[in-house]
Image 1 (cartoon, rainbow, N blue to C red):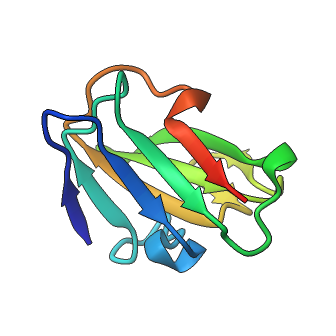
Image 2 (image 1 turned 180 degrees about the horizontal axis):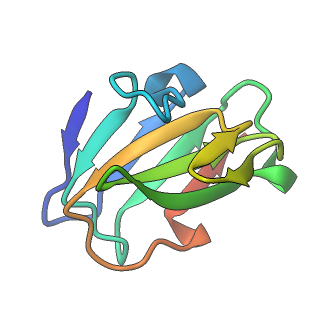
Image 3 (image 1 turned 90 degrees about the vertical axis):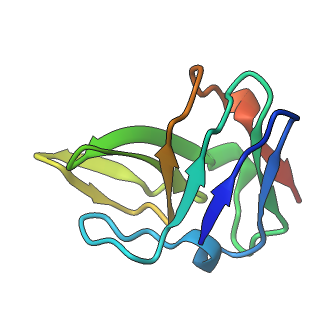
Length: 110
C-alpha cells in the first residue's frame, strides 16, 4: 500500500505485522510512505500481537537505493552484515522523508 503524508501531523497505524511485512531483500509486501515528516508524523503500532514494548527496536537502512525502516517487535532483529537482516517483523519503505527518525516517531498502543 502507498500512503502519502500531508501538511498536518500524520499517524500511520499498523494493527498486524502483516500490514507491512518484512520483505528484505525481496520487495512487494511492504507499505510505501511518501513525504513523512519526522518532526510531526508517527507510526502507531496498535495492539499488535506479540509486541513487546521493552524490546521494540527499529533501524533505517538503504537497500538498493531505497530507504526502508525495519521494525522488530520482540527483540529478535539482527544485522548479520553484508545487507543481511533477520528477525525483523516489518519493513516500511520511505519515499521523500524529511527530518531524522527518533523513538518519538514510534507510538505503541498496548
